[in-house]
Image (cartoon, rainbow, N blue to C red; front, top):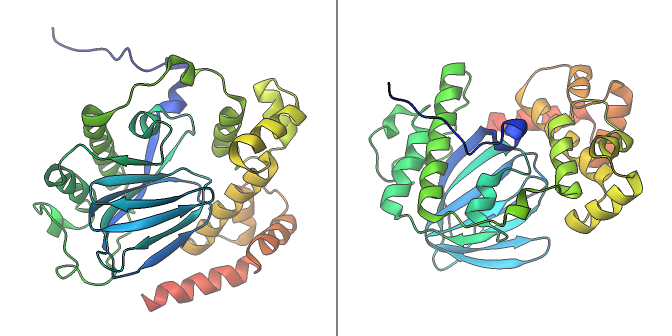
Amino acid sequence: MVGNRDLILDRTKLGAYTFQFNHCGFQACTAGYTYGFALRPYHLIHFVLDGSGTLKTERNTYSIHARQAFYLPAGSGGTYQASFEDPWKYFWVGFYADSRNCVSRQLFGAKQVIDLTMPVSELEPLFLSLVSVTDPRLCHAHSYTEAEYPGEQFCQITDFSKSLEVNSRMLHLFSRLLETQAVCLDPSDFGPNPARDAKAYMDASYCEPLKMQDVAAALHVHPNYLSTIFKKTYGQSPSGYLRSIRMEHSAMLLALTDYPVSAVAQAVGYPNAFQFSAVFKQYFQVSPSAYRKQEKQRQAKH
């Protein structure tokens, strides 16, 4: 008999090890190209393969160069800009994961920017293998250049087998990254952390008609204590964070599906469609229907 058994995973906390692919891509930026991002419900990592640029978050500004990666946790926002003299080329991958997921913490530790130890010659083919799930031209490619793939060539994954395949390739990418540069974490980092646990709970349960009392009760802490420690850790109230991830999820559903507004409301934890519409308009300064129309028009131009 041959076989193996995984003794690393804590079977009582399997959710903390779950990764689900959302999107990925390459971009060779023009000089000074700027992209601003608001709160997103998924995590995002950019791997800079060439050139340089600047990342500005709510708290810091980073100068980033080739063979570095920067991490944008779910719930964060900021702006990044390519250098005018040496604009960067990067690959990005977005994924859903529990906020307590140890993989991103093993890669980045407490940092937002890290140096990559794996050679670009190995990294880039691994990135291209993710894109090749929907673009067979890249199956045997070893490098990406804008001239060969001009403009925006972004494919949607609508086949379940391809969804499984791209997720498995993403996990292989992360396994290789961990092999080459995982940082050692203090065992206490995996212990109870009310702010992080509350964030993870809301990330997983935003689709339910959740209240802060429910979150606090699930973590066995007082709502006032939870509010204080969450705001200290993440710079916003837990109710504000919950509203934000609901709004960002609903915006994606409105842009990418034809679900009725009432169904979108239900999907993000609002049983009352009128209440959802009011919160959405306050958040985005436009009604859900108008937002969908704007997004369809924008997509048609591409």
